[in-house]
Image 1 (cartoon, rainbow, N blue to C red):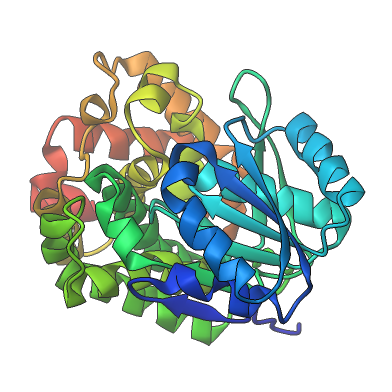
Image 2: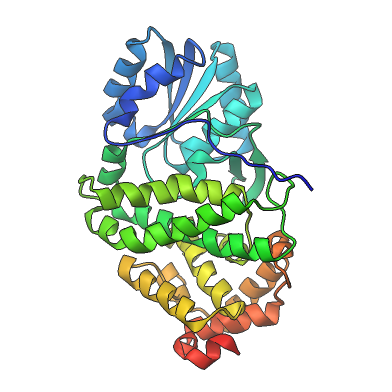
Length: 368
């Protein structure tokens, strides 16, 4: 079976990087449609307009404050098409970027990603996660190509609330464990190919980078200060994790995370990346990984304040019914097919209970 590598064409990171948008967009077209998160538009409008004006680009800046739904994507795709847009730029958080990706896909236009938070690895991937009006996962689409440019202005990201970077770290650290599961099993990437060694190595480097630099990065997150530790952590979240995930695949951690996202109390209290982080703990325990590996991971969660229990995710009463629901849904997830030996619901439920009751810290319990 052929192995396939996918990654963004061009990745730029650093303070004031957003000023390079016009220069890079001009290589793709002269009429640009910018879908910008309404929450940051007024702050960023001057630099966006100046960067595009310097290249004599005709730009339409569209404020976005909606949900990532098929209806919104279809509506905005028509607006961009009628406006003659040749390039779609997404500026903002996950909702704005996923919607802009969907618009670009519908019009078969190149896409430029300008994230203003580092809360997941999505800005550098092809994936478009779509929800229905009730905020339930409805579909996942794939653009034909990864973003042509990913422009990461770390001065903007450093000023964003710290919880976003924490969520991004949680999402990114899962990449190593899911990559290893897919490598050992029969898992396929989203390209329908076997995982690449490159993806597995990058996923491991992503985790090691976060362990080394994540705690210091979290200490300055939200202050606007950009340090070397912060730069490394952002790179791990937005680039390393994206390359690792897209060239290996998902497994238990995201099977758990997907189901956690359907629980209203959890969804309203915590971020997707925190759900993936908790799912990673479940995966490590359920797979019976070495105790030292679990203890390092569990300690790292404490160092960056990632949730280690369902209560910390927002579920005030993690009753047995919820444990069974989580375990059963995860066991039935298509991601579980990537495991060497798919984990049964009973094993996943045992792992969740071990975390909830603190039994996972009892070393013999990890390996039994």
